[in-house]
Amino acid sequence: MPTRSARTAWDGGFEDGKGQVELTSSGLGTFEMSFPKRSSQDGGDATNPEELLGAAHSSCYSMQLAALLGQAGGTVQSIETTADVSLGEDPAGGFRIHTIALTVTAEVDGIDDAGFQEAANEAKESCPLSKALAGVDTITLDATLENG
Image (tube, helix red, strand yellow):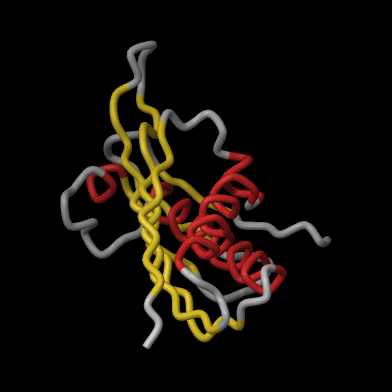
């Protein structure tokens, strides 16, 4: 598998500085960031490391779930995954990610809810980003199979 790259250019100090993060490998975009915007409730029209981590985790999880559902004999019609990443104070000093809440809704033919839940939980444990995030205190999963 290839190596992927992102680059951040930062100007100034922690609280008064600002920067841009660039998706270098894909060339898909450059996004503004700053600590005041990072710590604001609405995000301030900028991205931040937690949002980028959520994007990475939700996409990785969705791919892993699709693979596992296919291996279990299901035919995936759609998967939608949200990853809510919560940053908080670290008792040892500074900040740390305390929780990631994964919420997934999928439409899959040829699989029942028990098989879906098994695949959903296995994907939570086995996707490469979940493995990389093993130091996060809690990663939760709420998985819903919607078949008409």
